[in-house]
Length: 604
Image (cartoon, rainbow, N blue to C red; front, side, top):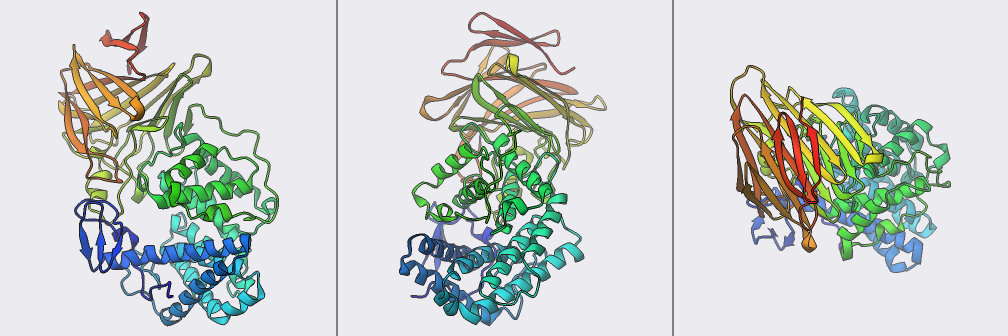
């Protein structure tokens, strides 16, 4: 039975419903359906579906090959060989010319619109070939056709990297990491077939990965764009590049960088292992959970301890019964023994990632975790969300970074990358500018279970200074936001609440109370007061980007003045431990239900 459709793939991001913004589900005959019953036909959906189909076929070949190695069922070997040979036969017809449907900004591919897509697909095919080539009979079955396909793929990878790095002078691009991963695995597969490797051996590609990591990562371990997904994307590419390498022989500087990348995930994850999806990236997608799982499995073979257990457990829960078992077959990825975990393994306290500007605020007394985005815009994958504050709990995303739908959706730039989608400040209902913020105070005191971060930006809104101060005090989270015009003129400022859970607002005295309802009866309580006349509106809005059509209540808190200070106090509990909050002579006074009083300074 034919497994591979003999047609070129397009761009998978086009596989999205233009009406609802959700990724399409599947092909039914010549129709492509969405969750809400839309039936779409023709382009760009057909070629986008082919990307997913070709990638799934490559994953099938990789899984079957590794399952055969583990269990020895000839049917698995036959299935893997059939897929690899069918791709080789089709590629023989098309690899002489570039894909004419590629868009001008893309690196041209041949089997796909993008060479990036081709590289991702090629890593899986090459890994399947390496495993299958263990047996002489299988090597003979693959033979010259497969070697020819791999050689042509390697030519594409080399040319694409030259265009990207030399012609476009873009060595920091995340594409480069994947071109190197594909080059390394294809080279390894050619060697396994005893075929020529005209572009050097695997060491060339590993050396290039070292070069890329030196310029694409900050000292805090983050990939320079500050997008959670692209951080994962690049880390996964690096780990794939080193297939078969001896851990002890890897460049020590590279190993340190990789460890910092892993520590980012450990330090950034929520209490349940959920990774906040800041900036571009799918909010909740099977493919991403599989990628996270692969990173956890491969990193767990590079070191004898990673701290990623909770992250891996979250990914496995989200994948559930949809898992085909591939990642559990990736044993022996490296040729040596795992390196000892460094002694300074990151703990689960509050952490500031100084280069990317993300502050993660935690407390021993509560599962409530706050993430303040006080970093740079993040290039093409950045969002207009300077000084946004995201909130997570154990098993609940209270106010998460919303991610984006597939890029073919107008809602990516039309809503989710805009300021209105994020819990931050906008002026006169306009988007922020592409901007950077700066962290001015960072104080952590484990003895008193307190963390304080203060940050500001005078770039996000023209003529306005934005300041935000977030403090966790024994499980109570205090959030102070101030917007001030530099010329003394009054403007309309709005600070936003963007829950991903049912949300209600009640006016109370001089301020408001908000109730956030999580699963299994979980509750987050908010108490809110401003220093000038203001209105907190409970309005209809969109939730996270995995399903933009789900209506959720959101909050827009607006005041018109030359300067306004918005103060919110949050606590996770069945009943709020906070009786009231108020402002008195420039200080915040929090009256607790147990009779105690907390006083905190506002922004100076």
